[in-house]
Length: 269
Image: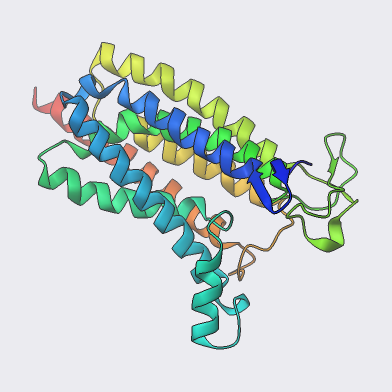
């Protein structure tokens, strides 16, 4: 593929970095344009988005370092230095999502802004940005799939790509594109759900819970076809699959209690 958008001598611009940055910006713009839906100012939404992006980048990198800590060297000092060397690659999406969510929960609570209301307008923006970022993964070769003779198979021949060396020149599942397509589909669904929620005054948090459920299912399934290193497996599941199961369970519990409370409210009437 094309891991570098531009390369002149020692100077290079990674395609991955450009597309991930574009994803962050477009997702943030989507959320920014809907700040009025939760009655906050442009200044407030700008601060929220800035802090959320910083938290996501730090969390994504820290999760990656945690998962692959043993691969960074022999001593603690060597591992720490190697972990800090390159911030162009090596991020875990779930790490960024979890870290920014926890940070925003406490930050918004302090600012007296409804967390679930913000999560509802943020969910479509997050999944849109993620869809674009996964295209960057495809160009870089990271997050690649297992060898396959499936009709959609792709072959990475560029030795500078991040595909496992043993799989250079071998047809593999384009799991990055599977993920991107799934995210675009989820974005379209969430976008129209958000419009419907405003029209019919849905319970706060339903859009965010729908995102968590649908993405968790998609991610769990796509992980089956992944062929890159993803950390130690537990009960034949990758760390991302375990997080996906947890995310789906949280979403289902939210739906259950939302339905239960609505049922109770109707009976009382």
